Image (cartoon, rainbow, N blue to C red; front, side, top):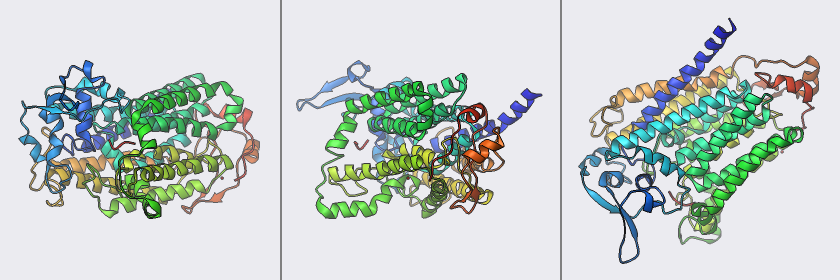
Length: 539
């Protein structure tokens, strides 16, 4: 009987996994090869991974000392015909000869860690189009597997935080980047896995759960440091932030601190040896000519574009696919709901960690822009900061204690679900339109189609099915917002350790929710204490 109940409980997760796969594949087939930023560089690095001399590619150096590799033209030349030309559809890629070879000097010479390129090289073939879609499907499958593992290894309040954080930070940029051939895909996935696995790692009280989350954290770090140098730096910040958030558990489980310390060291070493990171922090992203107080003031007042660009303020593709304001307004509203709900339940340590995260999120791009002598909108792309957003959301959405989680009222949960689902649907529609007809074509997908992914369902079907599938997956926001969390602690402990209720910004009175699910309740009874009072380069 118990096994039957467990199987029934697994059905919602299975439905979400299937829906997420369909929604992600809709994004994966909605754009042609080379559509993510600087993908010509990344594809050349995938076909000829570092060290390039041992990659199997033909390498030559000209009289000026410029090294290049010989590649199939379709690997690197496809985006050149439509990038930065929003009215040009993706149909121009078919004009690139299938058997033509070209010399290309835009590839990774050690600026990036290189692990992402070497793994993706497995899919490289003489058919670049098929290879790129295989890469996109693989990265999507990897994201779904990681997400499912994080959910299974977490308690119910932490699962709610996962649903809230992903829904509010992954749309639309994350939905576009994760099923792509861009190393930012692994940076986002890796940091998300690292943060939530470390959070569950500190809450675990049984050996299997402890080991499972430790392994997930290590996998996340490996992915992040293999993809981008700045992601390696974020690993250090994440390991420190999550450990400080759980400082009470650290005092009672000092040996557990070894894992986050090792992960932080790995991230630090990779970040220090990555020229992508060191050059961005020392010399910036380029050689702009602006400077002085005018530059500083302009960047300060326009900084929200960089910080919130992943929520729809920024453009998709090669920054040439503008999104309607419905996307950005809806996503910023959802982010605001969750931010205010989280800030209504502050302990001093949560305020310290969250405040530090927000400071990094704002100070880092401002510093790089100033060093680069660039204005906001030049060089510093919002996607560089995307890996940090789920980490900050995790911290903000905990309760007075790390084992608690804020909860939206049913009304606001349904409202947030509607806004996120609508934003994803509109963004997907615009992305399909951008490549099927160009931005000057018909609004609705499927009319006057000039380009489409061979073998995939038509544009209209892809949009409708992808939108509905995402709405089903996002339903977890509502499902996890309703129903009580299991409680297995005594009434005496409730009176001692739970803060008084307080009204959240969403209008709901939220009581502290002790983590009791699974294996944490017993230790809560033994060790709970009263709560504290309520403080790069452009690729």
